[in-house]
Length: 303
Ligand code: UTP
Image 1 (spheres, helix red, strand yellow):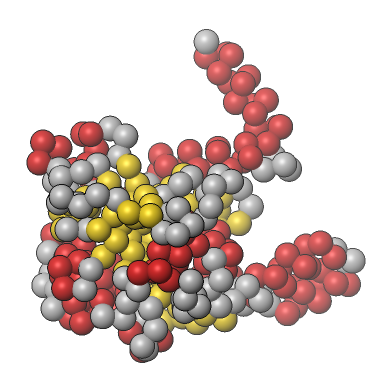
Image 2 (image 1 turned 135 degrees about the horizontal axis):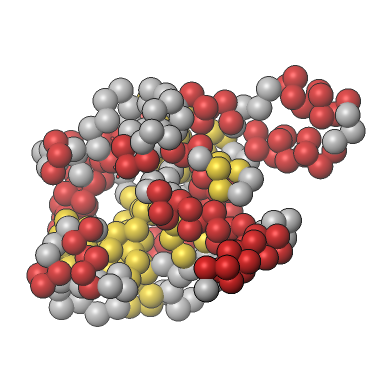
């Protein structure tokens, strides 16, 4: 196997979060808390666990809290030290030391492709991963999604997009959908499955969907993607859609689809955010028992 060259990640977190208003007027959705830490920290930890050492977070207006979170004030550290709160002190310090984290602003919210484009000089000639800052992937004990995507890249040298199987066929119209054409899935030497992407279709009607594999918030791109973003015209809602840039990438350079194991949590909408908190609270050793009893008692009353 070739040496892994993926060390950099871009985390777009500049979106306006209109689906979650009014919570997102002054507070970034990426800073919404799941049990005891903000969503963006889960995302950074996922990147670090896959061997990423340099991270660029794309922020915008009203997103200062994201920067502050990864730069905890030393007054807080001094206070925790003086009070002998060693465990909390370690947790706070560990946040600042997770990786080399930088920030840049997307001045106008022109879409995900434009947000990724803000990382062009950070990335230089390196291939890199993109993790959406409002989505947590819980591998649920399976091999982590990013590590498997990196493994595919290490063996093939091609860009890779994470996908998720859409359970309800009617839901395909909400996503970017992979068109595999006649291609059959292949495997890496360690058995990780991937599929050559023939094309992609943005939000197809259920009857016209070429597959049920939806693009799912994690990407591994060769730097060539920036050239295709430059050529991408604004699409739906005036936004520069990464799906359109990926269509060109797939045709000209090749692109593989990888189906994630585990569970994807998009916290950008209210219902999924609440479900995420319930799932994580049930799994957390500190909160699990109390929340389970609470839910059982509510359900018993309702029944
Ligand atoms: P969404 O598609 O959820 O868009 O972005 P949004 O604007 O944040 O939210 P809504 O639809 O108004 O509720 C997916 C990810 O891409 C980032 C977001 O921060 C989120 O992490 N994004 C999106 C940007 O960084 N810039 C953009 O211009 C758009």
